[in-house]
Image (spheres, rainbow, N blue to C red):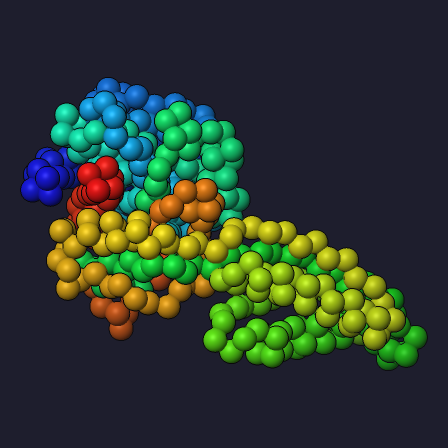
Length: 392
């Protein structure tokens, strides 16, 4: 079967490269992916692949039915871009000011279309159903969750889910597929320290919220180093702080934005409770107050062992067993594919795109770029994971 997949990937490669370029030139942010969805549906229509559109605003669910009986598997790609001004100089660089595909989602989407075209030609050779999920809003708003809530994992019931991410920290023609913890869960929070403003020369008459913020930032770092088990991973980052207007005025309030990352629900609770308790303690110490808005975002992404085995088998047929990484530490980035693996067994794959790890491809960078040839590997990998699962 892999030989047929390779032949068909070669056949559709030019079309998929062109699709990737079109998506890249016209990037759209979360829940804005109307043109991207139109480009995908245009090809699905051309090859008479059935689909449902406008799921969770801009999402698409296509279906390819093989012979009667068998299981159901879902393949997923994300469609959204980032608010980044592109500086790659590519001939197909973004034409939209301040927006760019700086994480590879243009490739994920194009390659999944390619996998769909391959699988559509092979539908008389497998039993079961393959669903293709094109989701909006992976970058922060979690478009996978509302698509799941719309019922995409039912009718027919999905038995397993698979996804891939083009990955800068890995070399081209290698894939990382681990069992267990793959990526972190993530929460975000907004924190305001409320003080009492006044003259910088008379701090005793004020309650300084900047001092409170500074104390909080210092204290919160001890949570990871002293509250988590040394063998556990966790991150608390304060990404933004704003307060005050000039050099000699003590502000009324200080604002912070931060994130907490974790690999278990137990540690999620510990980090969240610690953030709230330390904020409360700092405010009490200085005689001020605080407001905390804490939001759960994505759960940890956990690869099912049996699904990871299938994914490794699929990519080994394309890249060779020697180019498959079986063990690696989890990445503390987050990915809303985790909502899918919470509902069904599944596996997520990192597919390398860097030519030199001394100068790796940097995600979310204005110069993020990768070679089109990786589309060939990705579309074959998507197709082979589905076929391996259905034939397992």
